[in-house]
Structure formats: C-alpha cells, structure tokens
Image (cartoon, rainbow, N blue to C red):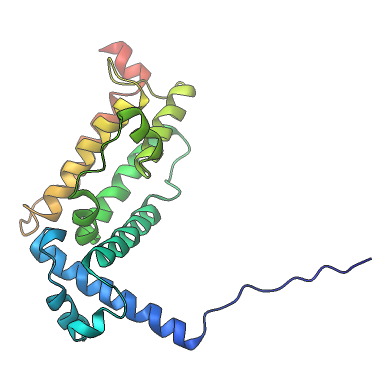
Length: 214
C-alpha cells in the first residue's frame, strides 16, 4: 500500500514577505491620499510615492500604472469589508440583520477610505436580477432577509421581494455610513444612538407581528 504523503503549505520566503509588506505600505499610503481627494480619478501617483517613501519611478516596480494600483486597492478594500461582515451575530434573521448593519457602520467609521473607494464609481452595465446574484457582500444581506422570510421571522416591504427589501435596508445603512465618513466626519453628536434607533425601527417593520398590527 502506498503511504500518503502530506506536505505543509509553502510559506513565503523573506524576499516575498518584504515585497508583500511594501505593497501593503503603498496601498495604505494610497488610501490616505484617496480620503483627502475623495476620488480615485484624482489619485496622484507622485503623492502616493512620496508618502510611501518611494520615488515615482520606484513605485512602478510594484504597480505598473494607476489603474493597477486602484484595482489592488479595490480588492483589498473588498476583503476588509468582507471581514467586517463575516459571521454576523444573532440566532434569528432580525438579529443578524441588525448585526450586519452595525458592522457596516463600523467599517465606514474605521475604514472611510475603503468606503469611498468601493462605492464612488458605477458598476458596469448589468441587469438588476444579475446584480443581486453577484454583488457580494450585498448578496449576504439578501440572503439574511430571505432566510428570515423562509423562517417566518421577516416579511418584505410592501411590493418588494427579498432583494428589494435588502436594497432599501442597504441604502439606509450606507447613506448613514457615507455621511459619517464624509460630510459629518468632523461633527460631534449622538450618532451611534440615532443610527441604532433607525436600524431597530427598520428591522421592526419587517417583523410579521409588527406588520399585522399596523
């Protein structure tokens, strides 16, 4: 009998680790510049290079042009958002929906550069029904609402399905996150309490008992 051979995954060597660390530093500098400019189209590579401690020419050894740098920033931001939304707390769908909203708001508060990067540009032309099947992590909100409907814990908004209800929910939560990350970034106020009340009210309106009594 041939004995199975188990090999451990190959770990990056010192050179590759240095390369990855340098790329991470460049992406962090680019995010800082982006937050000041509020548009990836206005992202100056010369300023990114300066903040990362490089000459503009040296920067091109890691990213061949601005588009490649922006793509790398986008994918990194998407992974960060996914980490915030992973494993929402709560045994019921309404509880998980509230948890997702809180995590999304925390993402916008702690990673405003990534929020700007992910949602400043329109997606390619696509039908709505296709978008709602591929637009992760928006699909996670849809799935949570659909699971709540299947378990009779949630009902969709009047005239809408799970995807439409998820869109209305996401629009509210994202709008709040965008205001806090941009227009209201330097305004002190009881925002956390207001946001929690608004989210709780939205989710309450999706509960069957609440809908039947209204």
